[in-house]
Image 1 (tube, helix red, strand yellow):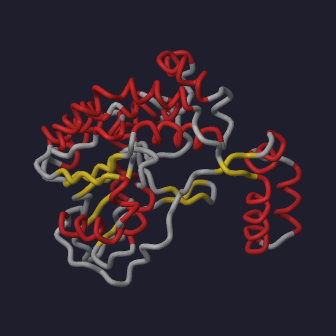
Image 2: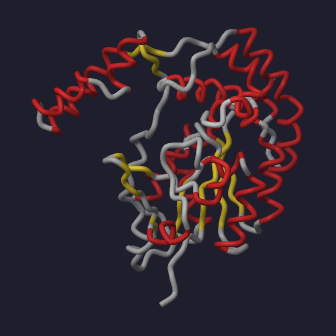
Length: 302
């Protein structure tokens, strides 16, 4: 029997609304998108097509072909079979080669793009929620170029500026695949249902009125009030172990959610000078991107 494999991929960009897109698509009756569990954590990104580049840097991933195809064992009659890995866009040379090798050239590609200045700051705060980022945003940008070479175990997400240089990434995917759908974050945020209908059409699907377009997923905008609260919630420790013993899972989850809300605060606005510097850095690439996607996004850097 012929294996059922992805006929579409969400390839990025990171922190551009891809988690919400993944979840909205996954609610459609004719869409299948896999997830897998590692140590009780539900994971949606296989990362298989860039495994050689990220396996040593990331905790979760599907690192062999048999395991990858097993993600799709429960596909039934769904017309659209897909997966989401946001780093496929950043590591485009490697991912494109492997996508063609394993899935062929007819796979459909979905790319979400966000103002690269805002995306960079959002990514910084995403990484800062854990223990991978010890620097300020400004210092992290200053040392970005050599970080992955210096630390072989550091997450690629710290390439805050480099990941926003979209033009060559998008050009490569558009030149390599005949079906590439671009979604702009602002359009997706402001009129989610309209953008989802366009995406359903791209995938050859009819609209599904049972989808919850209201709930947002993997939303940022928060940071820890202090390093001690971050340690309690993010690291394994005696306090968390004790709670697991004493409190049922459902109550523990509700309590954790409330405590996290108390222990975090809104992210402060980006420094004005930093924003202006990033606008200048991204300006030329954004101009190139506008021509590639035939959409004027130069307001991002004005």
